[in-house]
Image 1 (tube, rainbow, N blue to C red):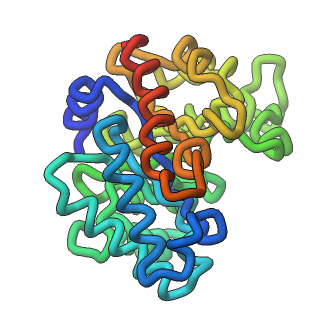
Image 2 (tube, rainbow, N blue to C red; image 1 turned 180 degrees about the vertical axis):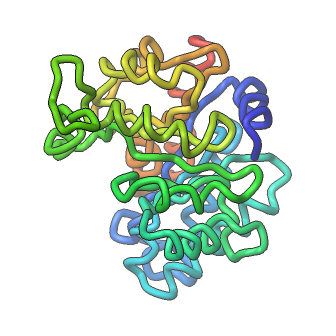
Image 3 (cartoon, helix red, strand yellow; image 1 turned 180 degrees about the horizontal axis):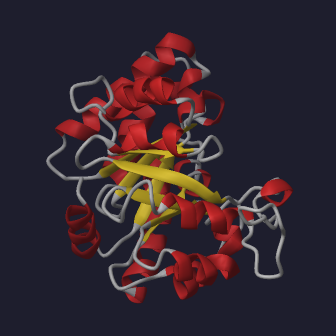
Length: 281
């Protein structure tokens, strides 16, 4: 999906909501836990209930890989279902990959290749290994790298907010924090048409600084809902002229109920967020 197509979809649905499909069989309704294709059936019900209220879905690969080959089959069934729907949607593989160049090429082919089994629109990437580990993900037209910049977990403070040195190894008063240097440097690896950034909703007050460095880029913002992030604060600091946000909610939507009404409750929670987004837009 191109940038223009994504922006048009956001305007059409009056939403920039991304629904995280972090599907854990232990948290699914009991009648689906041991059912044939239970994970896919759960995902399909969530998708049917929320697709008019969101613009993106983000399966977290760990939840599928943990189930082995069967989990990957459930993921493929989910992606096949999304691709055959007449309603367009942006798809994100939350995989946090990133390795030496030839390995990254294989990861890119696995998740982004239009002829592959999954054919995601975007993939989350860790920037730690630098340009040659990221650029192989930028070769597919209409596909996106979503680079980790400032995450919502507590451990983000271990590295991401450390001051960095200039090329001479001298830490200066005006030195950049590590996440800022990631933003600055990565602008040489991609552009606003193929690179987004992960910025956690629990760091909403820092979105202003992020926007100073990447004013026009899309940001994927997890942490709204169960992790305590504020949609209002995210919008206050992060919106740009094209919206420029994909705000993700996972547990707060898909596990709003573990009963037979799980899809209906998911729709209710998604609607609450979408209506707030529509007011902001």
